[in-house]
Length: 181
Image (cartoon, rainbow, N blue to C red; front, side, top):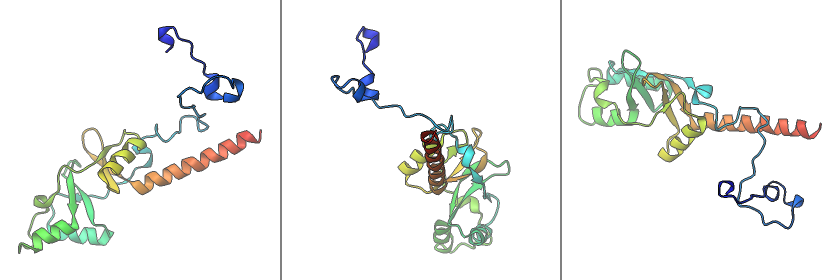
């Protein structure tokens, strides 16, 4: 370590041909950032957010199921009148709990069926952080909220993958352009 007075030879790490007699150091080589600050790890969720489609906590189970059917979705974020995320509604869970227990879906409030403590991410988190959280939780999509927990959108693992492919494609183009100079 340099702070302990030991010299460190970085030439063997960066280019072993320059100093073939040195043992390679266990150090990861830094790659140039051709996109000047647009790297995947630094971009925030806000950059690829999809518009929020939510259900109010004041509607009936029937209204929520109809809305979910119209959107062809199996779950939806639930918000209060301020727009604060309260949790997630699951079509399967509502059908099981309401129909299975003989409740009337037209009068049964959706509020009793909100699944709380679900994963979500903040709009200012990095895309890489959101991706890791989603992979760890084994989920395909999460609500995106402000630090005040107001719903602003959703992010999906598919959108993250697309962003990674776009970034990789732009990076490939930049590398090819630089190599032709």
